[in-house]
Amino acid sequence: MKIKEIKTVIKEYNDESELSAEDNNLINIAREASKKAYAPYSGFKVGAALLLVNGEIIEGNNQENVSYPAGLCAERVAIFYAGAKYPDVPAKTLAITAYKDQDFIDEPVTPCGSCRQTLFEHESRFNSHIRLILAGKKKIRIVDKINDLLPLVFDKTYLEG
Ligand code: THU
Image (cartoon, rainbow, N blue to C red; front, side, top):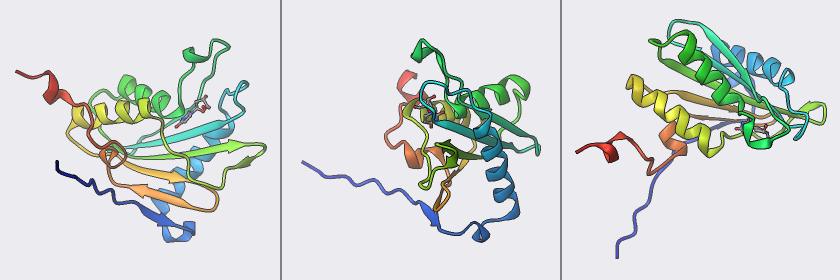
């Protein structure tokens, strides 16, 4: 028996002033997008701001449905719209925020498993990485690539030969 350890590097910030103007701008856009989410069932409003390498910023927020599984997370709304509008342009950075009970949540929100797999698909399609900014009100976490949140990912090598 062997024990394997997988290392994940997460940068944590307690103060937004430590971040670049570009990152802070994305967080602010994600926060505005959070407020516009359609989340009447959970009351948990997630916002996403996706910066593409061409400088475009795509917004997304969660869109819920009375038939719960028919809804979609903020991150996938953003990444799918980016794929629809700019099919040849890789994403660079994704900021994610969440709003509930009339305020942004203190802790950084983290993408669900399906969103991680979807973001990973974008990375493999473009052979590039998406930096994630998980922004809470009191703490911000940054990871440099989806794989940091999705070790042992199911990738296309499993489907090959
Ligand atoms: N949600 C997102 O939009 N993104 C996440 O990363 C986690 C969860 C949404 C889905 C649902 O509308 C609500 O938050 C509660 O789960």
